[in-house]
Image (tube, rainbow, N blue to C red; front, side):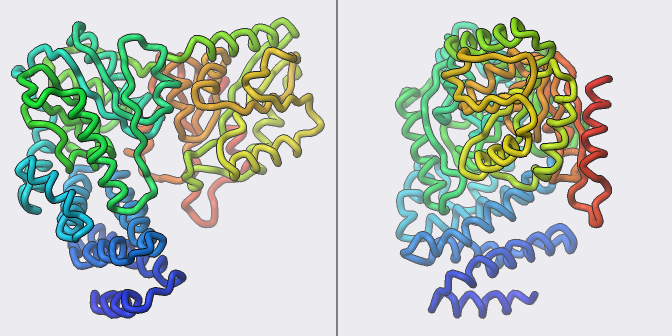
Length: 494
């Protein structure tokens, strides 16, 4: 579409907003931007400007959300999923344009003030800073002397924190054994890292689905957390490690002086090995920055109470005659594209339970949608021995074979996985947890045909980790449910 088409439509809706028309216009703008960028090699800054206006124009935040959702959910997510250098540069252009727009508005006066504290007074200064870090992020840093404190940003999602942040924790502790390590991130981190006495969690929750100013307010909250942990003049006492975190909008927003800042450009550098998982790439980056040659698999440090309860329950299953325990999680972290049909899920569980001495521990999930799917799945398997039980009540009963639906949080399912014989699930946090605890892992990868993306997010650990890729984007489909189940069963035999 011609830019004038969108300009005219937005001018009309801005004057008289109609909620039902804002979402399709925002989506059209976002997709048109990607069309121009990916296929015509043209950066349509006017489209980004209109999306910024749509995300900030109204006093009613509900009317602003379609613009913010399309900007982050379509444009930014698409630019970040390819793991290519050119897309990383374009993401930086988009985000610097968004920040520049917001700081000029009355509601963004605080944003402008905080950026100027770092000497960032224009689009050019913001873009120049992040591009410098992007291009030199893996340069050897002999100037980094042993700090007293290391501040490490969370990647916000649990799967990425296991795959990336846990590797950094181990490597940084080896390199700087006397340093205090503090991870800034969400409360769930305590469930997967809280068992490590060398790590302190500064709890901070970042909204992944809010408006523009809500997301940037998250950056200000992180600045305040850093201010509490770092003296006004760090003088080599503190370093901050940014693993390409949403908390800094992937490095675009400054957090500390450049001399104390390490940035892992996880998404795009053409010189990076193409076939490495993100965990292997994290090790590669740390080797280059610190001039080392080491390797750490991802890890989790779970709470002792969770591990003990899971161990007691698994022991009771073994005592009842169970020969194999399979942990399954069908969660997708809110991304429905990663999910297959309920028919597939039922067929897979039915096939696995053909062995009468197999117990499946099925994570019931979180939220109304996942809980509803799990309830339907368990009801459809009513011909099998079943338990439906909260994690806190697990030791109460046991059986030699059948299906156990478990209501649990991320730390509790991690504890159950750690005591299982194998894990099966979609691309989500649990695949990385399973690999990290050394359990053979079989991941059904759907919703993407990008080979680089799939390789990067391949779970990494000391045990086997296999990918079963399902092309859900081709029409008509190139598979059926029986094919996928057969491939999973074959992978397990390998």
